[in-house]
Amino acid sequence: MQVSKHIKKICKIILVVVYYVLVLIFIGPVIDHAFSRIKTSDTNFEIFTEVLLQLLTVTIVWFYLSKLMFTIGHRVFNLHSLVGIDDIIEIVSGIMLVGLQKNLLEKLSYITKVHPFRFIQFIDKI
Image (spheres, rainbow, N blue to C red):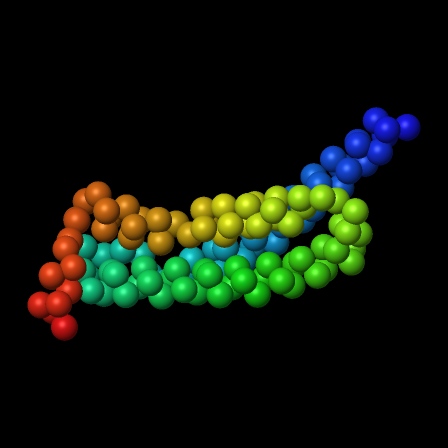
């Protein structure tokens, strides 16, 4: 009896994770394509501004999407009995949404590895 109860919980967790992954696979690239790819002709300030705007956009979308998906998930999958499901959902959605931001990851890689710049350079440009 106890084993079948645990198997049902595990199946429910897997279904919820798959639900989140499928939704985020469609929404993540939409956000990513709203921002341009990195161009070496862009100034440091332009690259930094785009990184901040994209991070802000991802954060806002993640916040509201998480609330919406959480509400729908609790209604559809009856998640009230699962302890720790909220943490699982937040971890999966954070990793998926940020991980699907290819343009953002390229810009961050450029800023941190290829072209490290200093804060003083921003002050001179402004």
